[in-house]
Length: 372
Image (cartoon, rainbow, N blue to C red):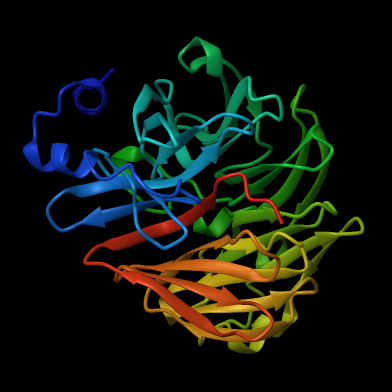
């Protein structure tokens, strides 16, 4: 284990906090309503952290992190979540989603890095994390034992380079994996090492065996359209948010939707690809599965789509990237890098500000056990 990895674990595992600023950030108010969402954020004094978010937009806790976190895996039946380091980081922290108490700290295996996303198995016994190997560049899903301090048990093939997001399908047996196709290495920071040979795809695989069930590649002129983030509704439709790595003027679709056995490209995005900087951030279905919210942080807006991927509304949110379902059908919450949290009505496109604070919300918001 190199010194940087040792330092990361030492900081995370050490109690009490050595830094009074971080101690102050962790000791926020736990009273009032329970958190409804989780998000990573950066505060001017406290630095990087992960926070719970109540329905009014306030945070009952903020847990410090040694560097930027990316997204979360939420346990299906317990007040437990795991936050992953931003790609290509190596740390992960399990914590109580009500109090923010850290429960376990673990890292990617030597020669691996996290991609920022993961998911629990439906029974909650296993955590699966998107990872990449340093030596071969192959993508894998790390399998961790929740009851044994998140000890790594095995690896499953992710069926391509650069798996990013992973989600459980409604059958509880199949995983959807956004194979981004982008090779990175911690020594090269976030430098993309294989843009000419990218092979992105959406892969469906058996959770138990890792066997590939079906793969939907993006080929030809779209081989640089990296699939990044996923959302799955109860019908088994999979919405994919994409980021293009090629010609900045190319007219490319930025959303793909898997349904009825085929991957449909949202062609309405092609004429607006350059305007949106060929980049989408987060994507999520509402609790009904009929509406989609897609963030376009480089264009400072959130787009509201129907199930077919047609754009209905746009909401201006400066550096808006995090989107998540609210409890009621047809409603979303979105976060921005300027500290805003807004509630959005998908039917009208009307946005209501919940709160604005002097901090920067990061890429994703993740709901805690929402029900329609």
